[in-house]
Length: 397
Image 1 (spheres, rainbow, N blue to C red):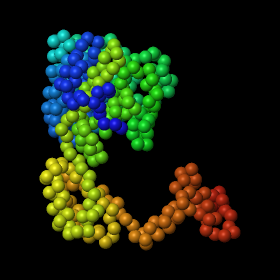
Image 2 (image 1 turned 180 degrees about the vertical axis):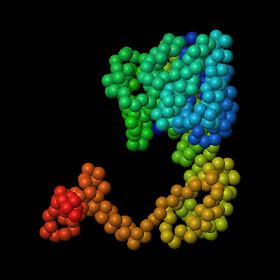
Image 3 (image 1 turned 135 degrees about the vertical axis):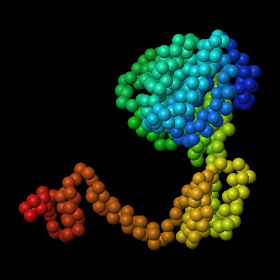
């Protein structure tokens, strides 16, 4: 996906510049979107403190009419007394406080929470149902595909769902007329490698042909602009390798009259995860390799580093020394691709041939008698025997 950018404007580098160039006016929707927080994937208190300082404290004074969590607030199903539930609840309470303060100042901020992946949010949005009875708060907890109407906008909200008929999706996507925006949690074809949506629906870009504005989505952690109109928030904090791009939350400015929109990623200073190759270093003294890694981490302020290499048998002793040195260091990881010798390749090829020849042994549709019968016929010339024949022999005995 492309990096975050503004539609039609590459010069905007901050929210303040955005407001100077495109001042807030009637008929304009100013929104904040965040997703894939995954409370529980890392130290929950630390994650909350980062979000309190770099998310809550930044948006509390903005004239937002929508604050949306676009799925996966939680990482997994937890007991209600765990830190992940506690700090997720504190974050939601902070947003509720912002919405109420805005309301007192005449800004009708709406708080929307979408259900994410079932093994992450896992039905835990019910922890916030009590807010639905608060007369001083407009909160929408979205657990089914539906339209939400906010300050004159028609917004299609699509949480990640399972077991929903295609007719239902077709009705909302194609059968209810144009709509202003879409907030969703899920996979759009082409946005991720392999287009794997699991048990949920794989959406296509053309599914959103009736959307007159942008699609704002959660689920894909390396966020960015996809297909010119779809914006994945990405996860706000980096906690794994392979996500070296910027992290944060999105500020959206949508003009309901012109249908133009401007989207800005407000970055959150996150942990740094770097992957480096040590192929050329590995043939030197292991002490020098260790010294290089330690100096690099300190100089570049790298929080977590992953060392990758193609390991040949002659370099295994050096690698063992390096691995042993970092054995208790949780900030150093290894990604080793072992290069096989000719002998190992030959053995692997033979094993592959054997597996292909006898793969029927793992066929669950065959009985043990049928498997044994096939094995006998494959290895004994001139013998024909069936599974039933073997079964009779065994039972007769």
